Amino acid sequence: MAILCSDIVNRLNAMLDAESSDRYLWVQDFKPSISGAIDFAVTLFNSIFGQNKLSEEVLKDLIRTRVYQASKYSRITFNGGSTNDLLWSTLGVHVNITVTPNTIIPLGELEDSILIPNVTFLEAEESCKRLTIEEWSFNSKNPFKKGNSIITSINLKRYAYLNFSDYRGSTLITSPNELTIRPSVANEFVALTYLKAPTYPVNITDSIEFPQTMTDFIVAKSLDIISTKQGDQTNLYTIEQRDINKLVTLFS
Image (tube, rainbow, N blue to C red; front, top):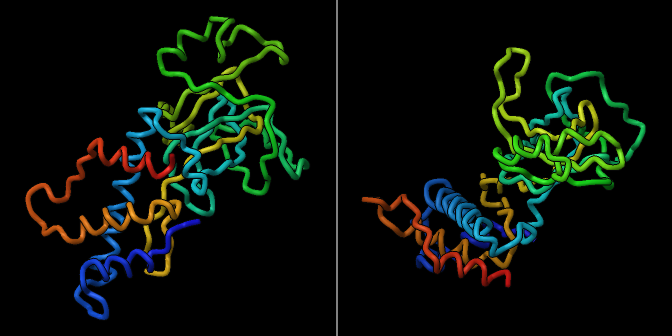
């Protein structure tokens, strides 16, 4: 379950000895401090994921899977859809997928991929392996590596993807960042599983899209931000090992 902003504000007021006063206000004080705490948590999670100390699954409320029709270049561009999701991290790319309803027919050749909003992903026959830029070029002619362009048999193909990059060298391509899949899945349906960036709260009635086990962490960081007078380096967040250990402990 998410964290209620009203709970954070109530606890901050108590810690600041500001109950039933207008000393601290939502727009001027609490909202920016909570948003800053969210930014800090995101940066901290990135450090933890980079050290393989924690799985993205702890943020299951932020995980989404959406279906796309790939472009004729076997690429997809992230689209937040009606919820205007912002991409935090790519978790998986799936090909040879099954969707429902299964009556939706792919469009013709596309210069840019499109989000298919009216279908639900069910399963995939294969997920793609993420490759680095160096691996992407090297593996192209290696039949023993996923993502090679040598093996063409449907039953033997093994897929890989190269993360988002701006390829626009032609006015025909309008998408700023595209993820590439190989072997080609041109004009086919594929699924993207991703971690969405948490949304900043707008109103005190909003929720923070982190697990409730992080409540104390968000309160502590919000208090740190809101109670620090502006001055040299007070707006710079320093990630220390104790911060990483604290967050890892929450989910261990």
